[in-house]
Length: 303
Image 1 (cartoon, helix red, strand yellow):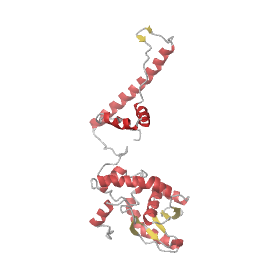
Image 2 (image 1 turned 90 degrees about the vertical axis):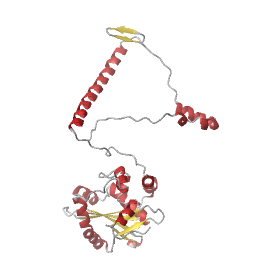
Image 3 (image 1 turned 60 degrees about the horizontal axis):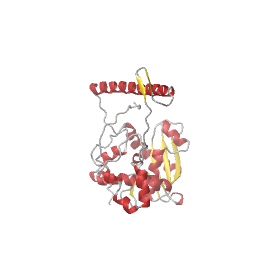
Image 4 (image 1 turned 180 degrees about the horizontal axis):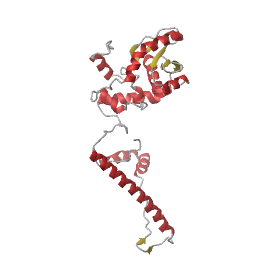
């Protein structure tokens, strides 16, 4: 597929919708604090608007050419930006901040970030943050290069520019990145939702909902406390018996014995091993009822 040159055009947006770029891989891997795979899926299919350009993003875009010049001066070679596709996997792409295929004889990709001071300090300490490391590695995969350079720039830091180099990790690529990216692309192609995370919820901010939530939380906590008390006093009663039926003020204790439940999964597995022709005809899925929907309500401990 021809890569559109005008990155403000509709053709460019359509091209991006049909590709998984390096900036999207940390989201797909669950490493991004700003976006979830489900949110990205909605954005790429047009069900949700793209993220708004915030001040940090605008600052990064403005500083990128300045940082590139600083990197090129320090390394003594040019790193022009480029958009690339993988030669075999058509949906894998990367919008590179810079690339030099002759760098030190083996080539390298360049990733530029202008983060806050805390994240910049990570680079000063010689480490690439995970969400950016995944981005650099995906760019290496798409280009076929094995070397990446992460450039972190913060004008307010004692040392404004930090360069951290890394090599390709093929175990990460084959065991983590490609399976996750391939599964996400299948969700795009089939228009099936990826699994939602705890962040993918609709926030309801009405007085009635808040009141109902407060009353439910009070009732739930009281119920949990009552269950703990019931279990403790139940055990106290049992400890005073002689292991036989007995009674006392307001209570009757009876010893009940019942047979253990059947492990149907184990039964079918062993049946399949002994008689595969029978097991195939009587697979448990044939006897499974219709899916049942229900509400699960839990306390949100993150707000």
